[in-house]
Image 1 (cartoon, rainbow, N blue to C red):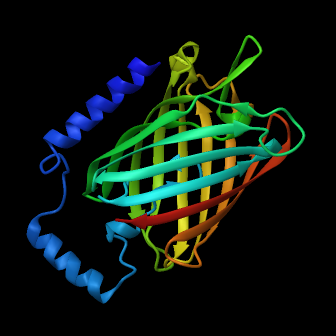
Image 2 (image 1 turned 180 degrees about the vertical axis):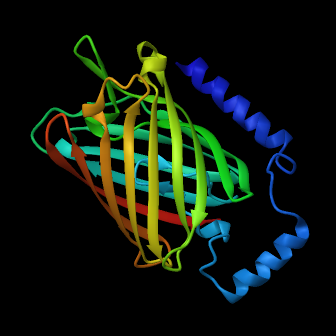
Length: 270
């Protein structure tokens, strides 16, 4: 497992070091100058990269935190579970971090400490003909929906993802329509093309203070687990620049119940 994580990290880190200036396909300099002027006139312009969403619920967008940005997140999910996440921007196109799940940490059940996982995301295309594209490594979901169960043992699923995004703006905010693919790498027994899944997401935000997200996850490529499709609605409030609070409602078809998830995030820079 450690060898897999180190291999992925070294590949992505090497790419970002070697091609940090040339790897991003972006707009010409003259277009960028005009774009900056337009952003000065309209702070809600959807091409202001620093304001584009990095996540919609549990799914990743193609945009990364800029160099020197720090992000921390605590997620409280069903049955007393806690997920923690810490991310730092290394370059404007590359971020790394780690995640950790604690099942049943709150309440009367016996706490379960899962193996912590690495996190990384590399933006490959940024606003190339209105297309954004990123690849990375992350956990797939919170709680039971992000677990692989084998021989009565459950493990958090980690793997590679690739995400395509198209930006837009309806209410003055900077939003994304997202399409992505996940392929599991850990635990090893989950490595199977039939366990790959696709997801969709979109957001509607009003400037910097409020956003509504809709996602559809766990659409397995084997098309034999329709009951595992996971629709979610995410309401995010950002009363100040540094803090964000998200309330997520997820519907599970297989159990016919609604999961309620609370997320608290903190964003700063150095």
